[in-house]
Length: 440
Image (cartoon, rainbow, N blue to C red):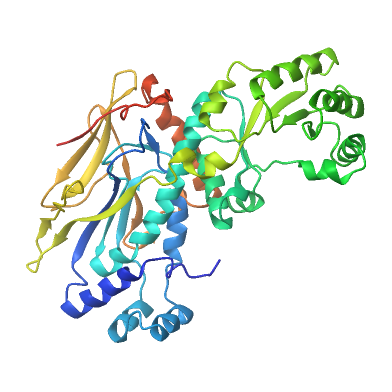
């Protein structure tokens, strides 16, 4: 990946910058807000992810000589704009929901306060990260909620791009998955990794027995043997014969899983391998995981449906200007009036009202249409939990939300936030957001 992230953006961000520099409006203080107008059809809540990655990418959002030379040679911007970009460092402030937080329509999950020229440059980067990561985390959370505490592993690297694969593994871990097959995700974000052998390893050998013996010799009897390359009952019997009754697990990657799992469990028990676990990995999604709830499955591996958001590959977030200073230096609220795309102007704060037992009742978004005074997103509100925390303060990144430690913190926060939701949130059937968002 290039050291600079500055060109991970759309051209019109830079052409707006150039025009604003020419008109004298580039340094107007602005407030941009990231929110979703709606959840994907049928979803009852979303899970925010990507914040920690975004902070790292903003730190590297610099226009070095390579980027400036390319912009100049392709006449994307010229003159004063190139000079301004050469010195660019984000100096504004960003508040947001903590990574792992649940969100709903119109939740102000990210608030960017900075001069227009600085804030507008971050639009595409912020949306590309948060939209994808939140889509994966939201799908993963649904799978976790129906897995009944059984471990889930992310294994979708071959179904998306190489960079998205790492991001997806991180988002899934935040949402409650236990491991990933992706080694870069393990190295970069501290996520446990897993994996043993594919069908190719069995096909490589002259017999299935040779393959099993080679794997057990290399990895020990606690390994997981893939038993559906040829005939499952024969493979299960052979697996126990080769590894002994201490065989760690068998994996099934095809067929009618509810039926097969019952048969394999009975066969393992009859062979004395009562402690051998069963893992399944056959194009699973949240509905398939739920359908296996009554089966003796011990763990799941999920790939394609996870990295594609299980049918909702983007969270649908938008990045909108909601307030700016006028020529006199006063804050004014601004908003779109476009059909079906109207926005609510003004700087926002948000809290989640809870019952006495800690169950979420509603999301309350307070709107300051004048945006005057000091912004205090973490202020205490009686009977409610504040949702906004500082992420960047006058250009300085809050480090606790970054790296492997920040990823683990986000995972822990997701568990806490999910526990507040009403039980209706975890139904897979189509429904409205489980709590309303109200303005005041």
